[in-house]
Image (cartoon, rainbow, N blue to C red; front, side):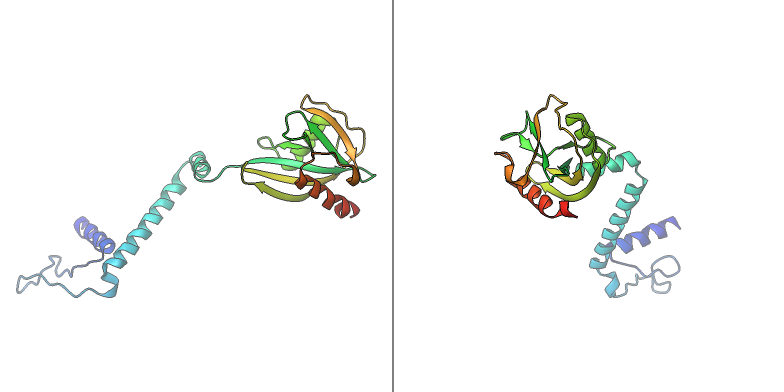
Length: 208
């Protein structure tokens, strides 16, 4: 019985089949082997397709039975990894935008507030934490504006639009200056992409 089962699997995979009579595979009267012409489903191409399907099914079984941490690491190792940051275009009641001058930021150092998201932290929570740590301000309202990616830096930036008020006073050694700016008084050296984002928000979103 085991021999017959093994032979049947072999035939299914490699696309050939023998006619078995009386369990011996030969004609009982002439003692000669009987071979039937191969049908369409018995051609080697069918066997190759069956073999490919079996491999995929085997891979799925192995994957599903693997420990969860191993599957997680498998995904990380086979996919591109990104850093994720949360940034905010924050305005006040006078439609001025909050900008920070970082000591370690390239260029002039001026830019919209934000930072890296910590493990198990939601993007909104990360931005609120950054503002509290860097300039001691609490956000009143906050909503998602857009998400963009930077290929060279392999970074995904989640940008919010929010409202707050109060004096922006640097609380961190990373921040050199902090201030409120109108659209016509944005500092020199502010990245052009951020300048365009601020313009879009102050001219449209802040009015809604």
